[in-house]
Structure formats: structure tokens, C-alpha cells
Image (cartoon, rainbow, N blue to C red; front, side, top):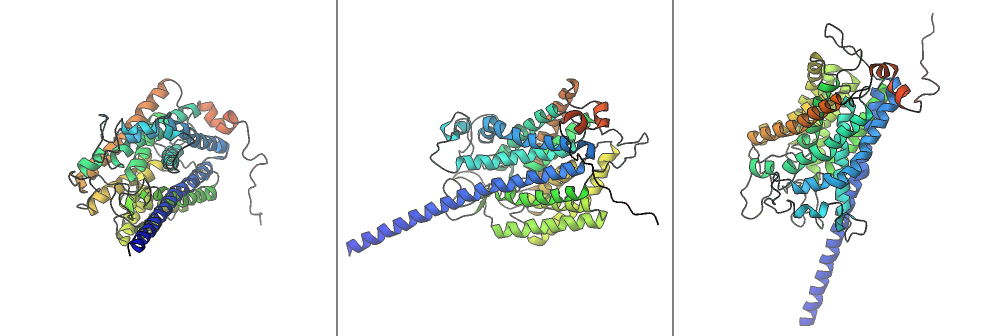
Length: 461
């Protein structure tokens, strides 16, 4: 009998070990797949921005977007990743409630750490770093579209590095980490990074636009705006849809799934705060926000560009609470976001702030709406899973408002100050002559359309 019990115990242990190993493999593959999915976002941004550019600036816009992606990889390796783990509780360097932050803990993320090398004992560290690197690259690319057709390449790269490898990741440390002071002290909740990524990027772009100025010919002396349409609207709309495809990978990266090093407790699916969520809930709400945003924009504009922007805006509007919403609520929140986009963009035009693709509106304004909507409709829900002896934090409108202000300032202040310094150094904007001639002719050793663009015409009757 004792032999049978021992044999049974050994089999149970073997099965548990196999199940744990299987969970680990699934977890690692899950995050690994977020990386190529998020790269699709950049295929979308590339198409979106080149299509939204006039023919004379197509390749210059593409080069800028490619470099924004490329520079995020080494800079996030050298210091961005470390910031996320070092600063959740501010600048004291001490660990927070879960003890997974602070200068001592963050030593593993230093570039010379054994965990940041090629011969790791696990398959997950580099994968998790890769997913966060793609978040950084996405943040920089959001800003990229607002400034097309007149920004200097060197100045743009400097701005992109500061946004992607410093500003947004500091916001993530404070509001998108279980030890983050906004989360533990104020109950800030931002599941899909509406504030942490979208608000910071959108308001960073706003700060830059103030110093960059509008494109030549955008505004008339009486203040009215001219339409400087891109050369390829179908390309732009397709790019927006590709961004949405990649957005599924972006939101996958906001989930903690069971497996070694990831899960708060065995068998649970959690948000990055450790609170429970399901992939079903996320799927319902992403699609409902997507549809609500399109319909809201269609009701107001009937314009296919704003309708596809509305799809993205609808998802951003409900992103912060994707783990919380009843699906019809996600639809309504997305609908409101889609409906307010065009009027909000018109407000920028009144102040002669030339946002070429609506990035400030779609990401900044709707990111703000998304963060505040959680405070309006989800107050009282637990904001995070707490450690033993730690006081429970709950979602509140006040906490979401403070978090939104922090994210706005984390974007706007460095964007404005750094772009002002670059402007004073002559590194922000190309010359008027180069802008009028076109950046492809003056800055790029290649032609986008060497045989020209065929234009159909209706024969005279």
C-alpha cells in the first residue's frame, strides 16, 4: 500500500511538473508573439504617414518612421528598461509594496547584467524586454505623424528617444506597475495604457507643435485653415487598419498570464496590476470600442479618414478599462470618442497648431477621455492586488484625474522644453526653401515614384 501511495505521489509530482513546464512555454510564446504583432503597428504607421504626406515628402516621412523604431531598440536596452523597474515609487530608489522595484531590484535590467546577455537561463527576460521595447517604439511613432513634412531628422530622433525611452516609461513605472505610486497611493487604473502611452505621446506632440509651427500654406492670414491633403488616402486608411491589427498584440502585452515569472498566482489571468481579467472580456470590449468609434466618427463626419481614425480612437477611449467594461459600455465610450475627434481637431486649427494626422486628438484627447471614463464609470473597483499588510487601493475619479494630469505633464513638458531648445539650436525645423521644394528632393537620395503617379481623367464629351 505504501509503495502504491509513493508511486501515485511521484506520478502527481511528475504531472504537476509537466503542467508547470507547459504553462511556462505557453506564457513565453504568448509574449513572444506580441512582438511581431506590434511590429505590424509600425507597418501601419509607415503606410499611414506616407499616405498622409504629399508626394514630395513621402520617403522623408518613411525614413523618419523607420528611424524612430530603430533608435528605440538600443536606447531602451541601455536605459529605458532600467527606468521601469527603478522608479515606480518615485526617485527614492526604494522598493514598493510588492518589492519588485527600486534601484537594487532594477540591477538585473542594467545593460551589463547577466540577465541582459545572450546566454540566459530563461526564455522570458528578453521576450518581456522586447514587448516593452515595442511599446516604446509605438509611443514614439504616435508622435511621429503629427510633425511630418517640416521637422529636421536629427531633431526628430532626439525627441523620439526622449519620448520613447524616458518619458513614457517613467509614466509606466508610476502608473503601469504594481509598485507604482499612482497605483498604490491613488488607485490609478490604466489597463490598456490610454494614459501611459497615448496621453503621453499625444501631449508630447502638442508641446513640440507649439515650437515647430504649421506647414507652409496651412493657414491663411485670416486664420482659416487650408486642407493639405496627403497624396494617397487609400494607403492612409489601410495603414490605420494595420495599426488596429497590431493593436491586438499591444493589448496582449497588457495581460499577465499563468506561467513562470509572470502570474500572480497559479492559474490566474491578470492585468498588469494583478487584478483578474479574461481574454473574453478583452475581446468583447476591443471590438465594441472599435465599432463604436467608427460609428461615432461616421455620424459626425462621413469622412473615411476620420472613420478609420475613429476605430483606433474608439479602442483608445475604452483601453484604460478594457478589463472592467460591460461590452455595451465599451461601445458607448468608443462612440463618444469617435464623435468628439473632429471637433477636437478643429479646436487645434483655431490655435494654428498643425497636427498633420490628428495624433494629438486621437491619442492625447481620447487617451484623456479613456483615463477619466474609468473614474466616472468604474469607481470603487479594486485598483490592484495588494501584498500582505498593504492597504487596498480602489479606483476613484480623483485618482484617475491626478493620474491624467501626471501623464499630460510627462508628455507636454519634455516635448515643449526639448523642442524649444532644439529650435534655439536650429535643429528643429527644415528651411522654408527645403519645405517648399519637398523633403524628398532635398533630403532623400531616392525617388518615391520615379515614373510619376498616373492620374485618370474623364475624356471631354
